[in-house]
Amino acid sequence: METKPYLIALDLDGTLLKDDKTISAHTLDVIQKVRDSGHHVCISTGRPFRSSSPYYQQLQLDSPIVNFNGAFVHHPLDEKWGRFHTSLDLQVVKQLVDISEEYKVHNVLAEVLDDLYFHYHDEKLIDIFNMNANKVTVGDLRDNLGENVTSVLIHAKEEDVGAIRSYLSDVHAEVIDHRRWAAPWHVIEIIKTGMNKAVGLQKISDYYGVPKERIVAFGDEDNDLEMLEFAGCGVAMGNGIDAVKRVSNEVTDTNEQDGIAKFLTNYFSL
Image 1: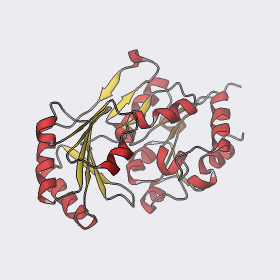
Image 2: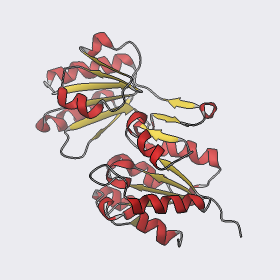
Image 3: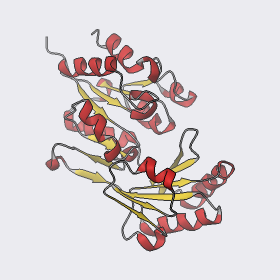
Image 4: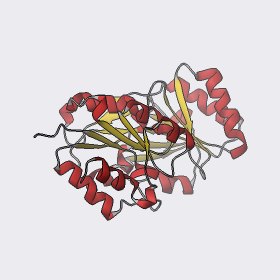
């Protein structure tokens, strides 16, 4: 009897990746077995492609990938598949810089796919985000940006994050969506409104012809909520936030305890 293919979508940080940002050998092995059984596996992450491609290669995937929480979806091995890049209007980005200066934030970072723009010089952040960047530009974003932007990160003082997010919701709700990063980062991440991982996953599931009831998605943070609700089987990591556990169909073990491998082994009777 031929098994009908499932689509398995993996978030990276806090989900597939252990806290040291590696994939355990056991999890790698189980994912390979799932793929050998004829199922599709894809990555769906808030990260840009440049900092998720090492894991794509390590898993030896041949599927499309969701980056920037859905603002960029493409197939790394097939240019003809299409590139879906949904960007923020440059004028809105300049307004975001204005408000950030009012709050004297630590920094504002704009990403145009794999090009990075820092508003202020910042060794620590540059080290963290520089992973395989095409080019890094430092200086006033209002002068240096010449095109629409994939994503904006505002690194604010902890006590200002709430106020800045309220402003964003009041003034820019029509055009942007924003999320807060997990501790210890007091970072507000901004992409075009309506973008989320479910939007990207829909494109991939349509491509493979896999219906919703055969989609299994794993996640741990608020940027996974839409994807977990979209999937026929949304699986929260044991280390996931309460909101993620509430919308999920199942809860598995933590990212440190091979939660994905345990769930898949059981689900597919490997």
